[in-house]
Amino acid sequence: MILLQTFIRCLLSKSIVGLLRTDSIPEVGEDAAATVGMSETLSEEEQNELRKELAKVEEEIQTLSQVLAAKEKHLAEIKRKLGINSLQELKQNITKSWQDVTSTAAYKKTSETLSQAGQKASAAFSSVGSVITKKFEDVKNSSTFKSFEEKVETLKSKVGGSKPASGDFGEVLNSAANASATETIAEETQEETH
Image (cartoon, rainbow, N blue to C red; front, side, top):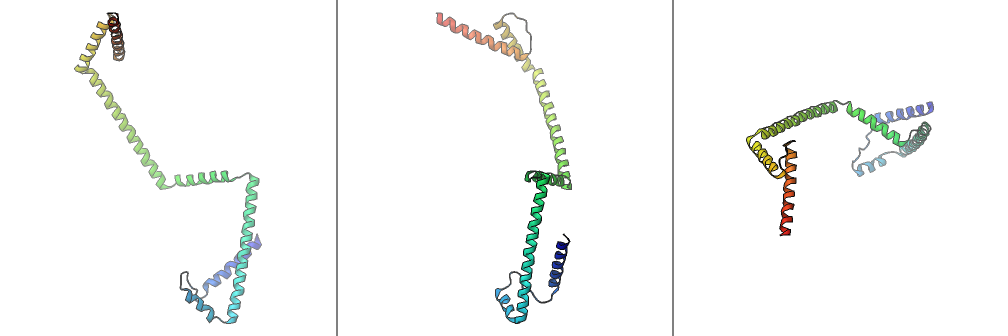
């Protein structure tokens, strides 16, 4: 590990020295003609030096790639020994990401806003329910409804006999419907016998 750190420090120091050089280096996208002309202005000795440096940098890159691959292999082996698989890592990443999201101010503000909206909607629905219940009570207590209810009671007593009125309006309607169905069947039977 110490050898790797020393190697990286060496590379960085050479890179920094290279960055501090004052000679111009072509930028990405410059004309190809401008970069071709540079090799002609370099002496044979400078070109050889640059080729050696190029080979050295390529070799260092190759070494770093091999070290990185070995570290990744070692990491995978450690995870395998610990029983950490890709699915568990994914779950951990999602959990951590969710925790990061939920701790943001934007999430908290949005959550509060949605909570308040939900409370307001709940109150509105409750209010609408109360209004509807009141309207049904008003209809039930209206003279028109009472008149209708009396007519149904009268019909029931005519069709069903003199049974005492009991039950709620729904029972009365069901009773009247059954009675009228029975009356219709009786009429059809009389017509068939004539």
